[in-house]
Length: 145
Image (cartoon, rainbow, N blue to C red; front, top):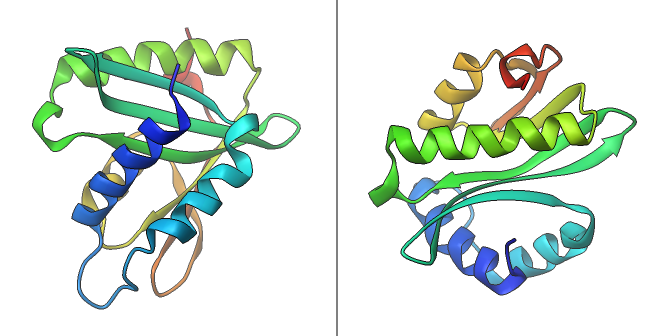
């Protein structure tokens, strides 16, 4: 279970690392409002080490069977296979329990690690603008339990 304030603090610290020159600065109050708008309908899976949050995935329903990946982050000091395996294991359960058949996600172009991960998992670019991509994944066999 993730507490709102814990998730907000984690996201603010991790997002700062991804935003590069030329992007609008991160406004903590605006980010708080955006996170709060959907927090109650969002499902989270997370990995903790030493009691602290080190990785999470958050998804929320958009329409029947289609869910939006609201956030996925791994703390830079904890990017290892054990954390990724733990996150994937929990995410597989979440997909199965919620009968998710399609995932959508938005990624900043500057976040090249996330772009690579989405492509490796089979996501396809469904829309694009100057700042980022919308990815869609309709074959969730990778996440089958």
